[in-house]
Length: 457
Image 1 (tube, rainbow, N blue to C red):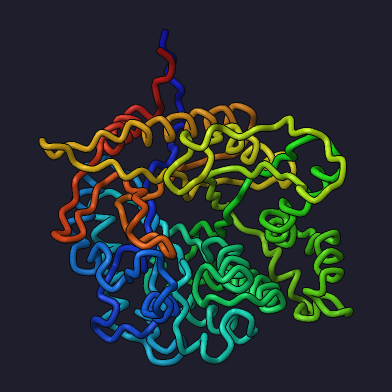
Image 2: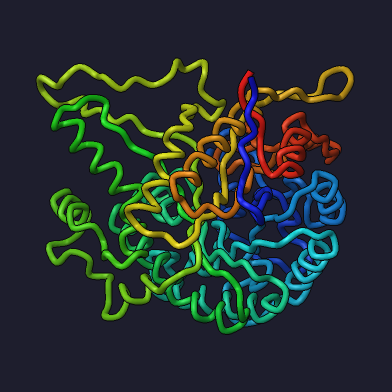
């Protein structure tokens, strides 16, 4: 017996990409150097030694890519603007050729009946701003507002959906504390300062976007990991509190007027990550700016964390177990749609978020073309179907979910993983730049046409 799970009328169906991951043309037409240009050209930073110099060559092939999106029936497309393509040195002189590229892209999308969702910052900070302090410096937040003003003044008459920052946790902790992403630092105080300045840049930019793009929706996108204790023990519950605070609450709480979580501030001070005075980077008015009301929250979800305090003496045996590793995605992430449902409901019931868009959700599998040139990626279809079913269940529970963007439109440069991971519903042949829709793309086209999905045997 099969069942159709329908989504609300007007539900937005799309895919997502990011500038550095697909555009290529890293030195074309006056573009400046980004921190990812510098990072990928530094030996040992990318697992396969690759760069985004060419990537999917979208800068030159955008017309072809829009035609592909139209053929797939996409209603919306989330893409990011390359900051150094617009402002090669981060501030000051505008590179008109770079701005014209996005003018043309937006016009082409609208002509194809595809709604543009623009992300202003998806990690490619101009290297000149990094050289003067990067995100740990307050001046970078000020520079971001100038950049947001320029882009929204140029595109705000046609773009009516703006995302300020993508994944502040990655911009701050993954990049400045763990060192996995550009600029590759391992410095706790710098990471905490960066986290604040990224949120401050967002808060300062919101009224600028509203002014330049009247009637537009403005929001921010966070990456989430639903965290669960491995056992009912105090040690595991306490460890889960810390993981949830580190990834989720550190950004959610200030965005929704709750200030930085007091428990995490105390933890960071006790660990020596903050001085005895605490959050000295926070100035008068900052928290009010960060909590400026927004129209929606972008949700990026891929997996969960089952948290175990391995050092706790006499800890209880685990009662929450992950799936066998062979059932995880090729990014080595557990598949757990229940965590998606739990997250969407939490954002609704605990934070009263007015509107939600799933701005990224997807799976990495390397299934390639067979002898007939067809790509049977059933595992990706299963992943997407199960997560969409969880999303529809969350809507039934009251979550104000208004749209869903698959990550990603096409296989692309996957940051520190290089080209070894393939998230696309479209196959990219990097040698020829041929795009081949996978079976998942055909399936997704049917989901969009039906505004729902069929589940069951």
